[in-house]
Length: 275
Ligand code: ATR
Image 1: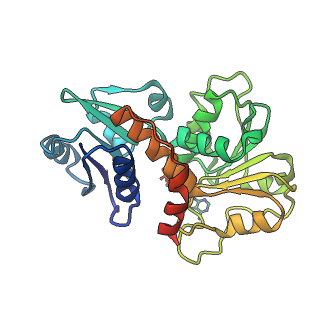
Image 2: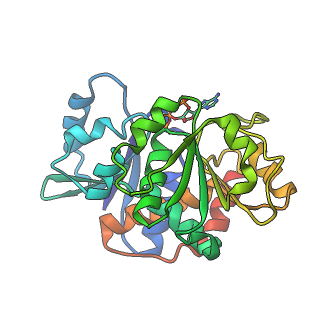
């Protein structure tokens, strides 16, 4: 089975490592290749990709939205999110899915089942592609108390506009979020702040956090961001970015192969790859 990833830059992606482990575990002969595409001439590069004989591929930055124009069908959840991270190819037909939000929520459910109740109060920091996937998945799962804070408020309005819950989401500033940190049971950091090596900058400070609050950061390089360090030191429980990374891959693999695997054993090995 031939699989792959399109994106740019992707040289340091861990997806080949993860999917090669999954192929091995499922006893499926196959390969997972990287296709680092140039941002121009996308459609022409897609024509070339069609000749690769792929059974499916993942899509990452900056093509998660652009790919949607090339698809024959898009799954409902991916349509709502407005982005695709997984494409399945069957009889030459390309169908798009988004496993980011599902990967996030299920990795959280495995680690902290108590926090995955719909009545929990949630704060999402950020309004980019990752935030969108997580937000719509939480709404779909029934979460009703979600506030979103982003540097650019207009982006939050855009992101929540197709939200069909009666409550809607609260749009607040980052400064407000910092003041109200103690109100939340779950805080999800989805921005790129903290991603550079040794970056000590944090999106907000967690001074007022309650013990036991779950703090999640989707950044996985470094594994322990300054944001998560402060959370752990303040008695919060932490959920790290590589957990979502692994689960979104497992769900993509399931879409391509119909095989669902036990990912537990892989988390520690993935952690070792990142250290
Ligand atoms: P992606 O789609 O890959 O998630 P993105 O759309 O660029 O990437 O989103 C990045 C997120 O990080 C956004 O929420 C962005 O805030 P803006 O919408 O205001 O741009 C946030 N972000 C990036 N750098 C930031 C910074 N220095 N301070 C605050 N927020 C930042």
